[in-house]
Length: 136
Image (cartoon, rainbow, N blue to C red):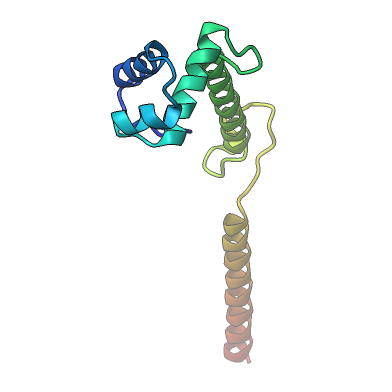
């Protein structure tokens, strides 16, 4: 996303209007008078021409704003889809809140269960060994 302009919109509009009102002045001269970069001022003038319909090949400010809004909308939809899919695999809620979703165990929970089973088997084996020794 583009950062906010350090020049207020009113300043830009007045600068472009001064340039349009003066005949024979170059963009570089107008930029120097305003104290802005020549390329920055040139972009302001070209965008004003597009907004007035003088440069049909260049999109207007309204079109640029709409495109930015649509891009943001697409990004938000993509983010929501990722979050929706991720929530269906939540290890804290069986099925991620969906009744038709299979219960998915997280790998660390499976490892915990495997470790607990191994410990229980080991304890049983030790008890059997002790019983054998004591029973003899």
